[in-house]
Amino acid sequence: QVQVVESGGGSVQSGGSLRLSCAASVSEYTYSEYSMAWFRQAPGKEREGVAAMSVDFTDFTPTYADSVKGRFTISRDNAKNTLYLQMNSLKPEDTAKYFCAATYGVCTGPWCFPLFQKSPYWGQGTQVTVSS
Image (cartoon, rainbow, N blue to C red; front, top):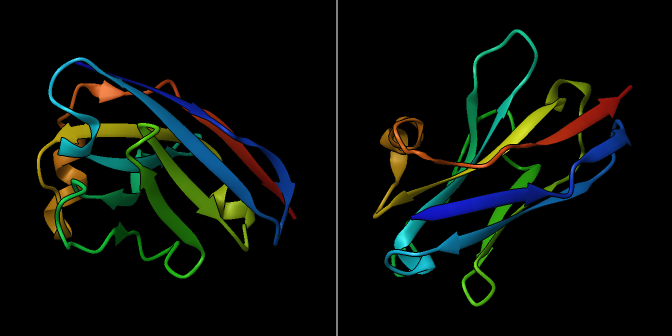
């Protein structure tokens, strides 16, 4: 019911910035009713949650991994069915493949990332490489 396609990855030097985009096609419900998130997976490591944003009509603040707080910002444009991840002050340890995911309904707090892990709505990912 939801297809997502990521874009915007690339190679940057440490301290640089990138903005990732995730375009969604929704066939059931509306985009604003889906919580959205960014995950990443580095070679040899497990996939981890980076940032998540609940459905649009809530006041819940976004959820961020501790490692990206203050550097990354998640946002969504419901008119364009698009999710963004602004990544500033990038570090070599941010190097990974970044994935967009969707899950229907509210998702907030420490239970949010595990909820997305159970969702079938994932993109193919976009590679981010940060060199020192």
